[in-house]
Image (cartoon, rainbow, N blue to C red; front, side):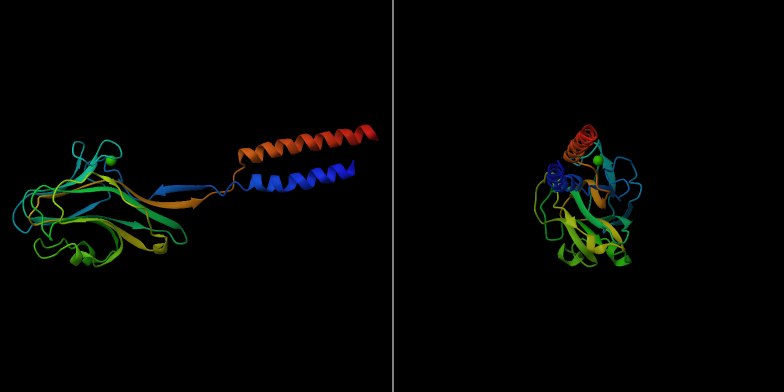
Length: 238
Ligand SMILES: [Ca+2]
């Protein structure tokens, strides 16, 4: 009987180990305030405008325009004349953690476009230079790339509308411990140009404690039954 018991324990041991090692599980939290632009006024976001000539240049939440891949509202820009604009939010990335960013974006050119018409979303440093709105007709997408730590999205010099879609996920874990800037930039020279943005996900990923998987629970229950049976057998054979 002892041999049977040893065999059972040898067989079940690795299975229990594998069952228990279902984790570690992970959880994510979005570090961006008003990431879905559901609240009018874009709490957490700061606008910077550069109107080359008098006109209406602004950011606003829109329930009707293209930007609404998450919830009821999204962010869009409005420019009725030549101008450019920046919207940004600074985010503290705790040290020794994992981070990624992804946005839903589209950029529409309703007029003839030029090299000075563009939309872009970047992770930049927090320098003053990073939030200088482009000079329409002078700064192109390429010349406003300074201070960029990671490029997230851009569309340049393409006339017509673009459906809003998720960008590729960009891993920014190497920036852990820094304060970074989520910067949205639109420049209109021949436009009008308008970005459609929603669902900004700058995610911190946490590893959580290993959890007992369904297989682990089944194996543990089986082990208890076997142990009880062995104990009963031993008592009955004394
Ligand atoms: Ca939204």
